[in-house]
Length: 344
Image (cartoon, rainbow, N blue to C red; front, top):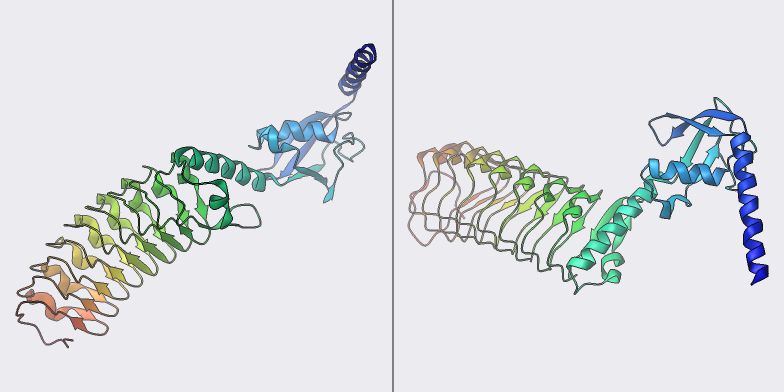
């Protein structure tokens, strides 16, 4: 015991001596060039690299838990943590870089998100959540396949997810999305199909998707007023829901490929519907439509317009001006008086 106490006393004396040496050393002013923005740093030449990293890490958003993973470089060369700044070649006017800041910040956020997902969804497990998580070189998300993970709720911090490719949340038990879900960024495909989602948050209207949004096989009864600003380069699928109407803003929707609204309960379309842009097939079959708005005549549909299995008894006069790439599929259980378009 006396020996242990003596060791502690000796270490304390060494630490005090080192602190005094650092304090007595010359000040040095230099620049942290990476990560940007470039900023000025003031330190003591006798300070160790590890202590400088520990001080700068939290200032850059890296917690103390992860700061020791950072690497400090001078002129592109990594410096040992035990070196004093003067030994590492850090002098007034020079530039240094801290490598790994962005990667570690992504890792911190991911750890926090996984912890929240596990807390809110006790039937899932960490292995499932991480098994199909693919990361980019900088630690950000490339794609994340969370299908069949028994997810019931998503935490508010899920809105910080940014996937450069795909985000798949299909085949879960999600009943709602966080109010801030619209902030989620997905470069290619967002798949929310086969859940129990009854409504979308207003923020969803800001979504711009590089490829595909799949909302099929949910319990949607309405879409938010903001939905008209949705832009999808390939396909938007809202089929197999419980939609009885669409918001007036729906005419602002832009879909580069197929727009699928089949197997809902739509009894009418908004007057603005004809302003929607559809590059592929517009699928409206298996609804309750009894008429179409006049604005449909102004539409340009890249491939097919599918209206089968509705309650249509006629079509608007403007339908003759409708531009359809392939054919007009207007088959119903009632007799229709159709313009001179090819009917299949």
